[in-house]
Image (cartoon, rainbow, N blue to C red; front, side, top):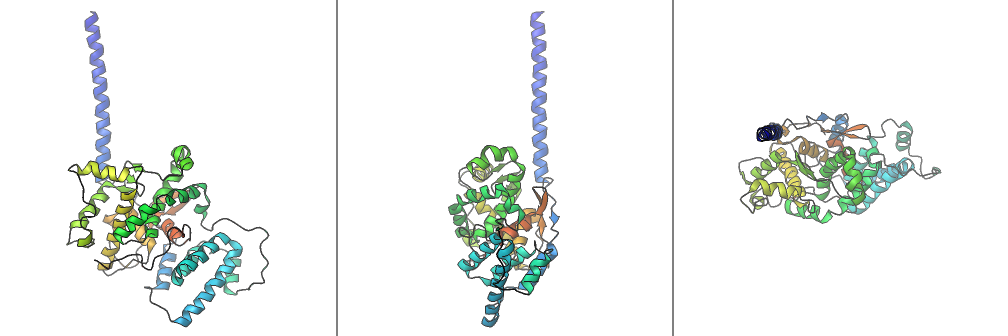
Length: 372
C-alpha cells in the first residue's frame, strides 16, 4: 500500500512537472512567433511636430552653399538669437554657441536654434525680442535658469546617461570609423533606446544603472544597448552580402559582420548582449542607419541631412522604410516623466542640442561614401 501511494505521488509530480515545462514551451513558442511576425513591434506614432520638422527641412533645402555676404549676416542673426535665448535658457545658448565655436558649421547651428524654437512657439516675449533685437542693454536675470529647454534633458537619468555614454566613446568612434557614419548620429539612436529604458526600468535603474552609471543592455526581444531585434540583425547581415539590394553598402563592407563560429545564432546573441563591450551594438546600429540612408538616396529621396527621419526609420524597421517625398517623423512613443515623445523627435532634439558636443561633435559629413 505504501509503495502504491508513493507511486501515485510520483505520478502526480511527474504530470505537474510535465505541465510546467509544456507551459514554458508554449510561452517561448508564442514569443518566437511574435517576433517573427513583428507582433512585438511598436506600431509607432507620427510626431505631433512633424509639420515643423518638414518646414525646417524645406527652409534649409539640400545644404547648398550660401554666398559670403549671406553667411556673414546669418552669423550676426545667430549671435543675436543666442543673446536673447541666453536670458531664458542659458544652458541651451551655451551648448549652441559651443557647438558653433568648435564646428564653425553655421547651418547646423541655425538648426540647433530651430530645435529650441520648437519648444518656444508659445513664448511671445521671446519671439518679440528675437524679432526686434533689443541689444546688450537688457538687464540680466537675477537668477539664471540652469535647465534645458528640452524638458526630458532635465531628468536625473539624463545626467547618468551622459556619464555612461562617455565610457563608450572609443567603441562608438571605432564603429564610426569602420562604417563611415558620424558618431553623433549613432548616439542619437542610442539616446532613444536608453532614455526609454531608464524611464521605465525603475528597479534596474535604482540597483545598477544609476549607481554604476552604465548603459542598459537588453536581452529579450531587443538586444544590446541600441535595441537591435534578431530579425533586424539578420536583415542587416543579409544586406551586407546582397549586391542587388538597394541597401548594399559595397564590397569594402561585405565581410564586416562575418561570424567566426558555426553557431551563428549563439554568436550573434553573444556579440549583441555582452555587458562589458557594446561595440557590436554600435556597429549594427551604424550599418542599419547607413543602409537606409543609401536606400533612400538611390531611390531619389535623400535623407542624409535629416537625423530625425533616419532615427524614425531605425526605430520602425526595414519593412517600413519606403522611400518617398516628405517622410513623417515619429516612431515608438516614449513616455518620459508623464510626457509623450516620439523616437524620432528625441533623436532630433539630442542631435541639435549641443549636449555631449565635446565628445561627439558635428563632422563635415554625416556619411563617408567615398569607397562605395
